Image (cartoon, rainbow, N blue to C red; front, side):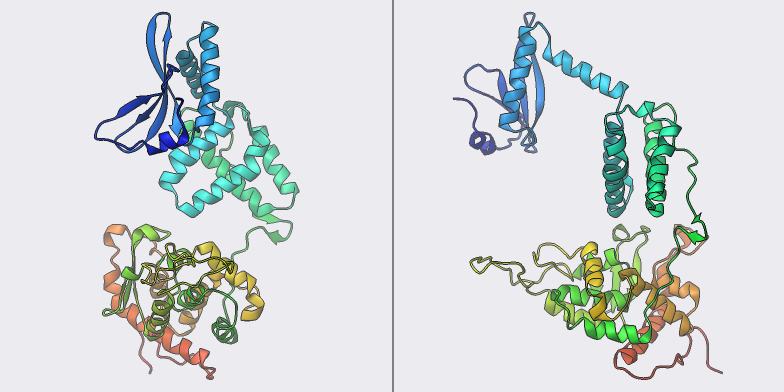
Length: 432
């Protein structure tokens, strides 16, 4: 009997790799590694010699797909050609003359995914798939000229999307530099690409200076109780304002990163943008938000369920401080952005973004007299000219605690609607 999907799925790994041939002398076999990887193999004779070739892994190569490939392979044998040698020749030809598609795939899998932050990988992949590959798909990478590059960038510029034009230029520079390093191209056509800074009198990428006013802070905080979002999202947005950390660091907060007794949040370097761990003191308002988050994470509320659905919800606490409605995963940075953008009007914050919450803390702490280097430490910005070897955040723990206590006290008064003057004693200074 030929293989069935049920039979293949039932195969389990053993201590040593083994191979199960398909009955009927078709030459097809399924090989199972000790790690559970299943791959298709084809045994055949060519000019009196017994040979074997791998066709691909299961289930990426389905049983139906392997039947088609088996027919093609047997056709090559009838024509007097060695199918295994044909595969080797095809692979060698691909390495000798890769297309832009091949280059993009190698760039993402061999370089970007191993060296870049996940958000950067996603953005590079999106730009490749939306702006670059549709224009150059199927073309040999080595045939892309400087004229081709400028034609692509000029076409994007003519659409009036100047920021995207600069982003594409950056991806092209990295893409072909990788190709040059890998020997996939002899020279890069994307070196020293000019970035657009101004178009007429308008700056292409104007740095944002937006932060929330006192009235907007109060409106934002109180408005979170009225908008239709899950409890975890509501608390996460409060946490973002109180702590001033990046949206990705907020979204992925694990409960075990928080030390209630020491009132500290330790963010590991693997979760930060600049690969520097953060040690952040938690002031009184942050502890209140933390207590609210602990309540919300006990049992995420089901969303988008039909009346007939009966899903078992785990009543145990989630390891994430801000679990999604699926409970097994945290909320995502993108979902935090969507929550703010969708409810700007109800929150009363105009055109503010999630990142502007971070800038809000930095701006008002500066108004309260906090030194710039201390604000940078609270935001986990690396001090300029200071190496990792000499950068020790624990030496700043005392000043950081005072600064966060100042921020928390001021923020509570603003939320309460009190008339607040920036008359708090500046950090590191004495009132004369």
